[in-house]
Length: 261
Ligand code: ADE
Image (cartoon, rainbow, N blue to C red; front, side, top):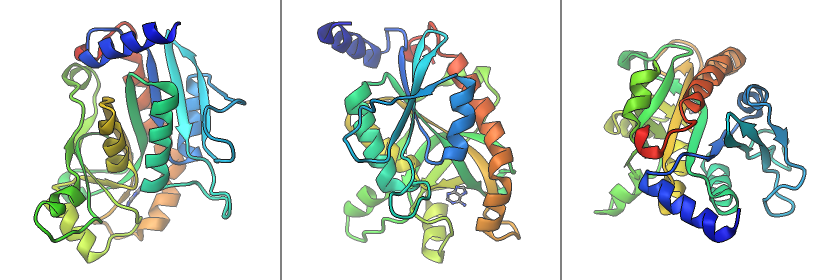
């Protein structure tokens, strides 16, 4: 498709009238990404659209007429672990928007959940709002900038169709929770806590790309088990629930425009 036509299509999609065609799914961990790569029968792009030398990986293919791209920030080049957290998430979101011009972004992954607010292991949440809990700047207005609260793209028809829990998501760069973080998470009225969501939302908002957040609960933050242990214990099993939820959401897209979600 010619660049001008493509740009016109995208403009139309942001207005909500054109059918959804290109989707970017940002996923921080390989364990979370690979089941979906299989489900959508994607292949790794040998000629990555990303700058030379970065560990970011693009899996792509056509599924039910949709151009699906799963973007995984890859392994840290020094330490060999998944590049989790807000810095990598922001960079891959920016670069994916530039290279792939998606109609819609899905940030899919795992999260901790608060049982006092109704979360259980393997629940999948669609985030209604996102905010940061570790960017404290106690100066008027900078305080709100730090929290960076944003409503997510509204999908009333999708919510009616698919059985997902809905709740607010709070993002920070730590798996554990300091007392300061806890106070901010409570102020954010969050039900779930992750390490990427609000960062993806910030970058996507710079370019007005509609974004939805699907987060599966691997650990109960207000439970008895140590978070890291519970997270690792449940990661593989909970990823199956995430896989199913993302598939159901993507299956809702073909033939629909953004305004019909
Ligand atoms: N991802 C999974 N569990 C998490 C937690 N408790 N905090 C942040 N990110 C998570």
